[in-house]
Length: 497
Image (cartoon, rainbow, N blue to C red):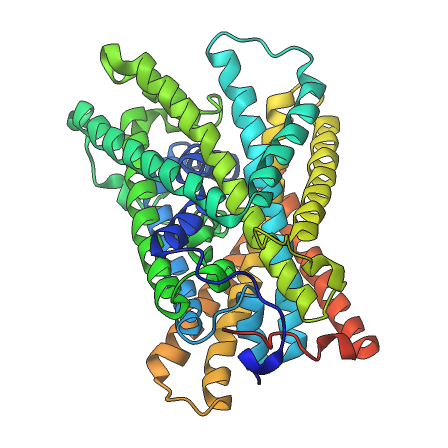
């Protein structure tokens, strides 16, 4: 398969350094937003599904997150190996195309774009508005016309995000880099202080299965959602073309992101559950939507109001930077698909100065606005008069919907690695290139099976079954394209620096 000789256009090279690649990946995960949203909603999911037996089971959230990090670390191994050899804004779908062929590459491409857009809308946009709606009443501000005010707010949010992406990858990632440093530092320092404040309550129990009766299947069922906590680890892949020395810096960014996210999120989750108390976990994320607000508002003495205010600003900005990173990645993959003639070549049009794929930015903005508004209104119909609940559940639906889709992408990447190595006649290490990816794939399939078998509570189960329907639909689309529009797949995955 040809690489630089293909004659395909590429994005502007050497715009980003290692620090930008790391900040792109870390920001895509929105550590502050994750600490607020994923920790809280994982607790709610555990309570609504298993609360009748283990009402305080959410005390084991740090263990769930640690296990999820281990699984995602295994998932990351294949992309790490590929990133050392292939640098393309196509990311995962380029990897899969090189190993499993064009049909699998196309399935990966549409799955990845779907997953990015679902994250962009569910985590970034709806996560932001749900947090704002949850925060304002807690600080004494009543939201007027709450049932509909969120619509112009999210539209303005999308415009600001896409305007920053449109301005160019250098200015957008410069902003992301500095705010991520502040975000990570704030939560690591305050979490350590919290553990000092509540030192009499320190316990190893959150890192054991004892809060859920030592039942490993409960932990596994929670991981189908919690693995999404670390989905940003591969966030540097689609900006590889724009990164200096990508075959070195992108793999390093993957490793650095695992360390940064693991330390920050797991440490913060442990501090939160210790501060809340094991016997009170039945209220964590259930009767109290955002317990982290209570924790930061009460735990630091006279500094509590100041730290709470700073935390609210950091979390709101975290959703913003995550959405910028998610949008950046989605536009790069759309650009790559367009230049390889998989989709309309007008989508690969770039700005003459910044090199940004402008039409792709506009397309992502339009699709995201439609998804957010439709999903938000549907859940408002399901939960009338409860705008915070409706928007939170809308976000959760999209986040759970995306999880099995992202697992499919990793399963295909895992499977592709060994085949690619053999096809290209490269040296094979069976442990690194076959056994580790296979273990990751088995764990992902098991997580999906457990989630379906446990029949998670409403509205969480909507996302699981919706994801299975979506995956089925993408497979059907792939078969149709393979049979009727085969020429569109001739160049898929061809480009690499």
